[in-house]
Image (tube, rainbow, N blue to C red):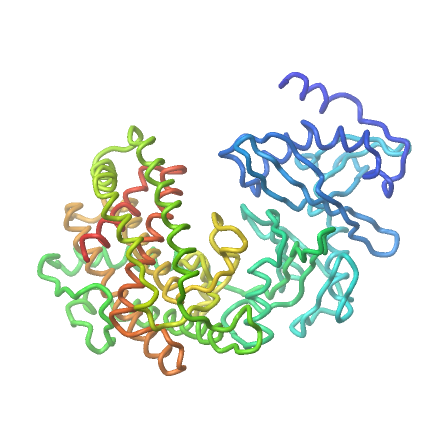
Length: 543
């Protein structure tokens, strides 16, 4: 098969005596295109999410034209079927180019159309295609009822196309910077519904005027043959920034650990607090301020404020039912438990099958995880909606420090697409807003432990002492964050429950998040599984 594939790609181009506009109706072309050639191309793409499964075949679910005047490109909706009996849908726009020097790395198929030799390529590589998409959004009419729908927001301020370039090394989507001031994100993996990133971005910008997320400027969607509205592209403001909050806090935490030696601190003498105890900044012990510095806690307060403001915006809608707050109920409890127990069993299987890849403390923690599986499972089952008085909202869903940009001492929240493993329906289920907070807390935990693992040798302390210092710092991070967050949420009458309920939900959601993370680490970098395993055990032991 490998030799046959090689022969196909290097032989003279396939010849079709039909026009570009008629090519996708040619059954002979589709047979060639959808067979090994497209399979070989797709599995090499960064945005392809099926690398851990076995591709069975690709079907062209449907196609549509992306055009302006006489310029025509095709948008393909591909159904990729796997031998494991499930499928993904992907969006691939294609173009025909005849320039021999163009897109050498991104050619899908050598082809001759009506005597013109050339190549079919991913159209996003073509500036002419990017310009056309930009201009179609710029000239979009209100209430578009055509099959391919372009939408323009009041925040779209451009009057002409000037330039476009790839944003960087994204994996699941492809982002293009337009005119050095906007970003068009093309969704690669698609769903038979509006993308949550589009819904949330438009809602926060247009309905709520939330300033700390890139402003929604426009979008492209396709109405498929079943009438589903599928988002294929989202256009937003480009926020100038100094990087993401993950790198920012890694740098801060490195400085804090360096201070242990510089200030000759004895870790065991540092004052300690309980986990999840809201802590006003004025009450943080001077020993902690002296060690960590005041600045990091001031930044935590700003991040807590922006997070609370996001939830206030999401919790203050009473017309659009997809965003109105909801109470906990039996249906939600059943949905939650089924989802988490399935995920937990998956993680158990993954750990059991990969124990041989682990060593040292990671292996010890993995064995503890397996030994305490019934105890952890009971914790997930111990969710009783009748005892909860708070409300559920549409939330970010995949909130961590990598989803936050840093700009001039402020924070901007982005990427509202939700957890990659979740179905599109699950991503839109209303959740306790503290689920986002729990995600951020897990991210703080990750940043602290990543610093110990990557730079531990630079600090003249034992690993045990660094763990002790890290856990202590983590509690103060959480305490200062929670104090600012809870006060602002309550001032704006968003109901997140009484204190005992809040602690229960935070513990529950952090356990859920750590179990979720465990799957990613075991599959991609097993030695890092120590971080979610440490998180799981600390949550279980804390309680």
